[in-house]
Amino acid sequence: MPGYSAGGSSALISQTSSDHRDILDPLPKAVDEIMLFLKKHAMRGADFSEIRRKDRWSIPINILREVVINALVHADYSHRGTPIRIAFFDDRIEVENPGLLLPGLTVEDLKLGVSLIRNPVIARVFRELDLVEQWGSGVPAIYRQAQVEGLPEPTIEELAGRLRFSVPLRDPLPLTREQSRTSRPAQSGAQSGAQSAQILLTLSDTPLSSHDIAQILDLPSKSGAFKRSLKELLDDALIEYTIPDKPTSRLQQYRLTDHGRRILAQQPSIHSTLG
Image 1 (cartoon, rainbow, N blue to C red):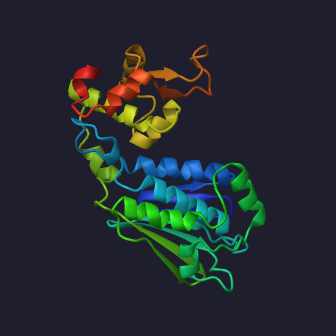
Image 2: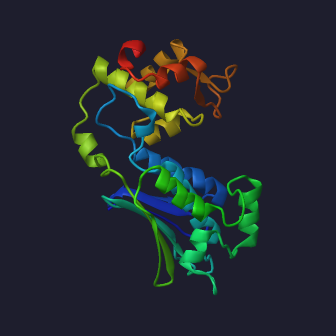
Image 3: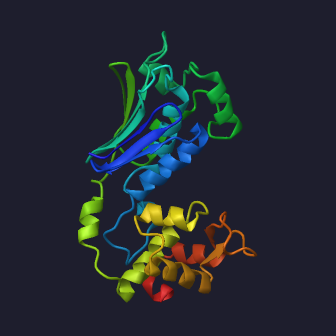
């Protein structure tokens, strides 16, 4: 069972009992770090001969982002040493934060958009950063999105001083890191093309650094194969630097070009285009 926990302004996730991570970042940045870790372990690894963007993740990323934000904003941080925890199971992902619902608030109230703010300063910061649209909008949006995606309804439970949000999965989780390591041979040309396709998929939502791309794909960022894939995508004008005049900048990131987005949107095999 993988898991992730956050204490105070921190968090921990793991894909296996030996793979976990503590995050001690400021809360708004912790959102991005948590989502990077979730994506790292959610990428489908079975077949990249056809690319369908809707099937890219084996977990509901948008729903989980709302659930994570809700947990970070509403956690009871007076419970010292009690972290926010995110755990993977075969059929669901659970997000737990310390603290029960505030007096007078019920689970049904949450579903209807009723909100009582435990941490007004944190809530205001998240609102100013556009991480929260309006008070009480997050939980109803989670349930609406689950319905749109055809997922079973998420559940909210109060137990032993904690609030647990369980998000069901449509499909079983992909291979564990140990399984993927044992089945990863030296890269052939076809595998190189698959890796390039994975990189394009990873960049479809937002620009990322090479380190973040490698982390999401569970690849060594300094490997020759990974660097070659990035260079080929740059040479083919499928991706580009965000800081083109400073290629080696520590702030450098990669983003899709318009050409790259057109290629990614195509339904047929991408390998012939990527070479």
